[in-house]
Image (cartoon, rainbow, N blue to C red; front, side, top):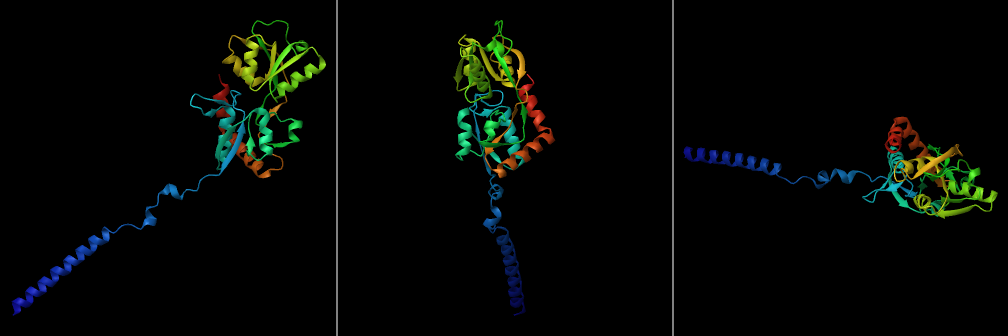
Length: 273
């Protein structure tokens, strides 16, 4: 009888141990709470997007590379400004003369496109703090003689990009001499091509862009003559009139980019050629 009792006790003890093991094993294999398995990426809030308008055929400030990506000094700068303020960027390419209307129609939040801060534009949009000193220059074919100043352009055939400061300067010369002819192009590259083939005598355009063209595509074909004029011209990033929120974001980001040294890095990338 005692043996039977002992066997029963041993059996119960073994069953208890097995239950404990199974219980522990079951606990270890229980599926985790679905909430603890959420992908970390799902918890990250998407960044707000800054909608940017630009005329992307103005190297080295904005252009399209072989992959179809918008690149250039302005493109790098606006991305750096946006990143400094916690924004992503989406760029829309538009004709230069369509940029300010796009702002006015709420199609973009800002415009960066080597746009000079001018009184006539300030009547329509607000500008950020200046980010680049520009100025205008005259470009002619490499072998051209007798053109060294704006005075020498009177009565000549000139080319410039639509809605630009270079076009305004060309039209001013046209007012002074009715024999002057001004051809207007949608992109400055087209104006330079017209110069190269002899369709015009000169192109008036922003100095840094003309300089870049002469060092790259127009090498040994085009030269700059005379001094830089309208040398006080500076580029700014345009926002809709009265849009203080976007303007504060851009000015704050621009200040951070300059103070961090990133502005200088971007500058050297595009102009140290």
